[in-house]
Length: 107
Image 1: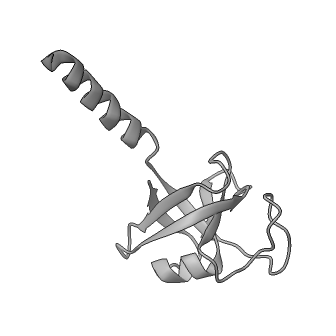
Image 2: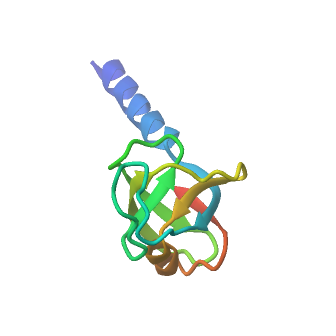
C-alpha cells in the first residue's frame, strides 16, 4: 500500500517540475494587431507569447533579478529569436521590473 503512494508522489513531483524552465524573456507588443490566437494585442494585459504552451494556459513568470512574479495567459506564438523562450506584454514586463530582456523562471 505504501509503494503506490510513494510512486504517485514521485510522478506528481516530476510532472510539476517538468514544466519549469529558466530562460531569457523579452517584451513585445504590436498594439492593435492580432495575436496567433485571434485576439487583439493589448499591451497592458497580462499576456505572453510562447512557442509550445497551449493558448489560454497560465504561466507564472519570476524575474531572477528583481524577484517579482506575475501570472500571464498565453495568447500568442513566439518569440522568434532562438535564445529567448517567452515574449511578455508591456504590462507583464513592467510588473516584473524588466527593461529589455531578463532571466526568468517559468512555472
